[in-house]
Image 1: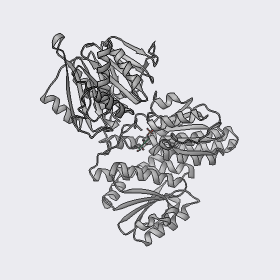
Image 2: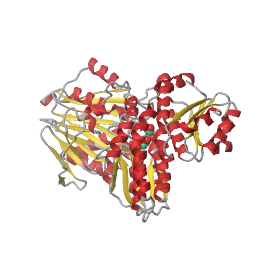
Image 3: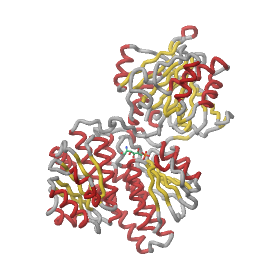
Image 4: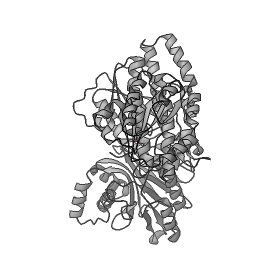
Length: 600
Ligand code: AGP
């Protein structure tokens, strides 16, 4: 969600900025822009090029109106305050045009500040909260001596979440960066310094990076970086060498990131199986927090924890949990589930849980992310970079991490016998191969998608663990193919939703749970009787029975019930993908969505 790139000391700042923004475009955006320090000495000025729409539009703007310089800041905007227009695109400037600002996050007291500034004579050109920051810095520059002081004073009056980068004509050899609840990374290059909202943007230039912490302000020049902590004391933030390669974040021979990431799922599972488990004693109670797919994975986690380790747990949508007033979590482990590790709601829920007496652990993919740093113990997902907005390998590695933790805690608290534990090890060993088998049938998904390119509605139904799979399958359909897809616990259909079923409805019935398949079959009959077409997803061993009920049956390899969510989601991801491709949708960057949701 929004991308920031800044550079000091580049031969061609515009190229570095646009290239960096390109690497961040997976986060989702609807406008883009750059500000570059141009000219010298008395002639120095900030040149801005910005536009609603894509980075390609920005590039053509730049080729029509080129600008050169060694210092600049750039931004991809995902609209929060005001429509995605040229005017609302970042960077924003003060009235004098002497300073420029880019910002990720939301300034929550924007309205009050805007009114105050307007009353003081500041004129607003955009509807953004970011312009408030530009005017505030400008106002304090008028009162104080330097950009550092002015920025600090600004941070003292704004509230909310932000990653900010500022440049100023009178301090032409540097840019300033500040963060609170929104990530910001500094890259240490040879004679050049960089700032970005995520690591991939910096990898073409350097592997030496420094991660800012909440409340930090940093001054970046070509030769050095100085960091002040939240109390304005100079502090040392240890730099890190990033070991992973840019190729891991490139498409390779695949046409889309989502296609690549779906294919990588079996390898990611194998990697996670070979990796160590987080060290944490078996908890007596757990509350899961997550959003979207991570919430669905948590639903599976709750069931697995109960069955395999006898540990009671609750699952809460993070955005709901963060405002739950009556919550006491003494003696509970809060397990935050997040691929990006930066989801604002999940981070806030984890913090809330800590305040309510819980201990904090997390299942996270992105190293050095805010949630990982906030948790006392982290289970890494080992999925590798996930770029497509719709999560695939992120989801399956979350499921696998939850399965492994449940088994480990079940073994530790005596719920699982040594021989059960050994048997499970054997089952998990087979998983990557089983996943490869379930991933294989692309052509079939393509054929099915062609035959059902635009159903009026798609229902996903299932019971127990299959209900979580149905929810995740429907989410995949909604977000990338924009179809009207809804998931229901199969037994709920008769309490209302079945009223929508007519002959133009498509029902995807997930039937992989051995003790519940017969029940879901009854629900298949109910929707068939009302004219729906039914695609059933089941184990090989149930194929014959389902053939007599559904219009089409897709089989999955036989595995224990607890493993089936890892297999059943694979054809649903592929089906959503092929449908989206046929419908001409932008699969990697669906409309209105962002990869890491860093605002509330
Ligand atoms: C899933 O495809 C989504 N794009 C979305 O629901 C995602 O899972 C959610 O925003 C949580 O993200 P996180 O795992 O990075 O916290």
